[in-house]
Amino acid sequence: MAYAKIQNGTILIVYPYTWTDFESDNNGTVYPASTNIYLVFPLTDAAKGGFTLVQPVATTPPVYVAAYQYPPLETTPIFIDGVLTQQWAAPVSFVPQSVSGIQLRSAVMASTEAAAIASFVSAQSAVIQMDYNTTDVFNRGDVLLAAIVTAGVLTSAQVDALFVAAAATVV
Image (cartoon, rainbow, N blue to C red; front, side, top):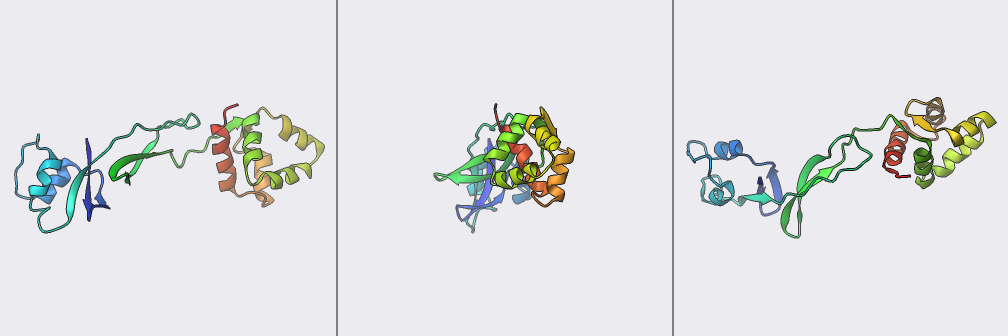
């Protein structure tokens, strides 16, 4: 069971609230290690005279996204229907280094940048247009993608976002 220290019923102070935090809050008081923090905390000096409580956090299973090769990360719990609930997020810094051609082209078509990318590609030579339309795999460092960034059609972050969206596309 995970716990969080909250104030005024909704302000998260410490998460996760551990046994070490409990001992630190109650310096000089000895509790057996089997003590249920949630039940004992309201009786402690740390809780008296204030609006601070320890509340259990409802656990939820992590949501795995096939596009990510790394497990989701636990984030700050939030109140859902009055219950402090564990939250998960995809690894923020993971950008796939390659995606299939159909995945990237599908992500482009679904993006708000689709018209700008189509305009850029159509202004290129027939060979580059054919390459864009038939490439089996796009690598993050491809020359065409670098040219799109250099031309100001997309930022590097927007290309990263397209790769993340493309990796999540099931074809």
